[in-house]
Image: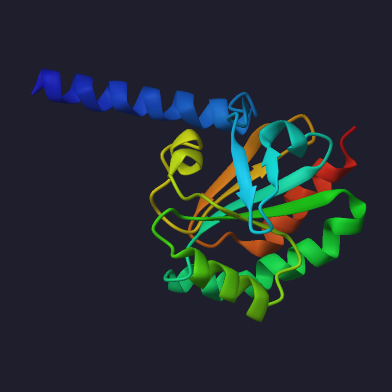
Amino acid sequence: MGIKHWAVGAALVAFAGVGAFVYLDAGRSAAPESTFVLLDGSRQTTADLRGKVTLVNFWATSCTTCVAEMPEIIATHNKYHAKGFDTLAVAMSYDPPSYVVNFAESRKLPFKVALDNTGAVAKAWGDVRLTPSTFIVNKRGEIVKSYVGAPDFPQLHQLIEKLLAET
């Protein structure tokens, strides 16, 4: 019984430590070096994200939550784009490119869409397997928040406004 209590206590201490680490913003890490291949064939790298607050969204056309959240992502992009905010939607490797192109064109997505044909980008960003997975990157190229599933958009907007105000 003593070992069981010790293990539970150690787990609670570790959990509290991680919580404090995240709460104190000490958990910021540099966005991984990646090359995104956009639908128009051009390339963008993680370094190109610096200087803007960027939402990087891993998604798939077959993901119902991804499709459902896309109007909110579009609205968020449109609301903050002129203030230095950018959006990059990264289609998962299993998503047929023709489906992605059709989705982007039919929904008139106003932001950059990348194809991750090899899965290398998803792997670099923490081995993303669940969609939607969204990362918020600050002007210095650091990941400050990540979401699995649809974000709470009012809270996301508060975070974006805070990050846009940073120098």
